[in-house]
Amino acid sequence: MGVELAKDSIDLGIVVSDGATALAFYRDTLGFKHVGDMPMPGGGGTMHRLLCGTSMIKLVVPGKALETKAPAGGIQGAYGYRYWTISVTNLDELAKAVGEAGYRVLTQPRELRPGVRIAMIEDPDGNWVELLETR
Image (cartoon, rainbow, N blue to C red):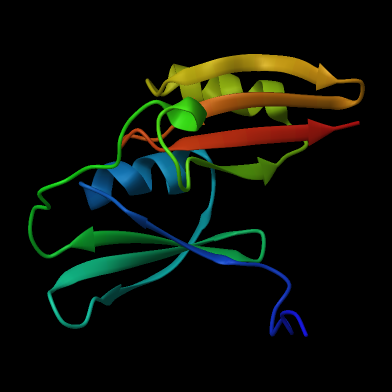
């Protein structure tokens, strides 16, 4: 049968250790549109909702400190969700802005194959984001 989509994009939840720091990265540095905040039911905390195109990025700040953190190391660090990709048209400019803002640029912009360039960046909690530009 397969999935019958109700919208053309995904919602991605990212549990973050500090809401203000995560907003500074995703909203202020990457430029995602902040569309609202809401309290998290059943345990407190806050969800900051941002748009990346038509995808909803949900930055979840738990109501209490968590005991565990996902293993570091990106793609080679562990099984499971390790990175996500944003298709952009300004790869060099964006990677430079990320670095200048004090965040880690793990892979400087480079050609992956003809017509496809990438950079890998890291958010304040160590989550990897791939920036992809096609020509």
